[in-house]
Image 1 (cartoon, rainbow, N blue to C red):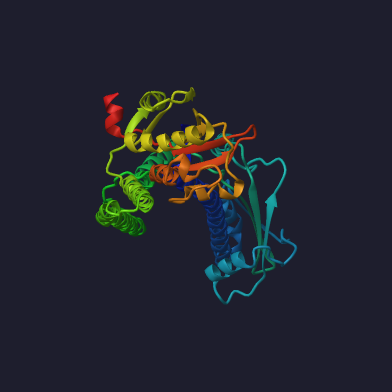
Image 2: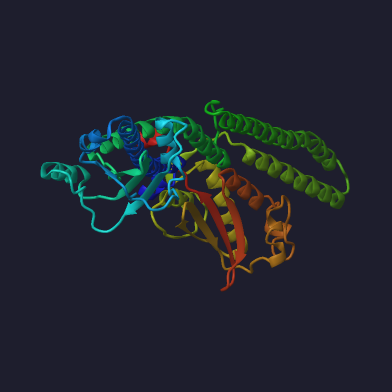
Length: 469
């Protein structure tokens, strides 16, 4: 049952959309967290560069005796300043592409032409907070970063008038990815629930008409009367439903016209045959009269068989759900001589009882007439009921197995006119079974005789019958 639900179009599309949404959210979260980290680090770096530019300008504009005080006042737990005659950064290549230098020169003045050196590098290995932090700030910092410290260290050396260098050192950590579990869980549940509800509603508009169309096609294949389906759903489904309604109408008209034409032909032939019979009786020569009467009677029998065949094409009888064992028991009791029942499993099939009784009667009588008796059994193969009729007769030549289903076809060697029949029994039987959505196949048994297999698809009971039970 679970696999059946999972295999449905609605559930598979919902699972696919939810999986794609989850994957997209995870990728977006990862990228967002990384971008957030880069943005924070860039902001911290520009903040330190801005402070360095302001301190450098203040030192150049202030008297030299105030320089130590300015440096002491500028120092903070996160940024260290030092005024020295030696530059802490010994190279002039910028690992940041010159962004920090450009920032400092813009803040100082575009005309500032002295040397500015920048060095950026990742801090690897055992990492501790800046050494000049107080113990309270160190503990607070470690708790906030949850012990996950990865940092970038930036050192600046800015040339000051008089041959001095303002050395600036700072470090900014990469903040760890924050995972607010409760917020994420509630967001995922609410978004997932909303998504499932919306998709379920949308898919119902799609799969509902498709399910009705599948049931109608299955019923039509079994020869049941199907009402015109309502056109609903998306454009493609509406077009498909409309095409099915038109196909059903054309098939119904085609079968109806064919049946009426065949019945009218058989009916109209009765009058001239009756006149021929009267005229044949008036012939004086006994031998000629008997020959003509026999020919007319044979033609009359063929006309009656044609009308019977035409009635077999009609599907006016309503399908019913029957127990197959009871159905065959009743058929055996109605037939003269009966047949042997090889009992099978308990199976309930939905069929038109009178039509199916007639089809099986034709097959069984065929086996009894030409095979000396019939044995009827049944089994279930998947969603199909298979009723077998076996006899011990001579069988049928392999090249003629399909031809015996043609109307009025008879095998002269073993199934001639003298043995009875007009060659319509198997044609009528196959027509009835095919109207149920099944078929009849013949095959010679290895031990001798013929086996006829009547296959009928098993259909679910209609809702009204399920409620009654």
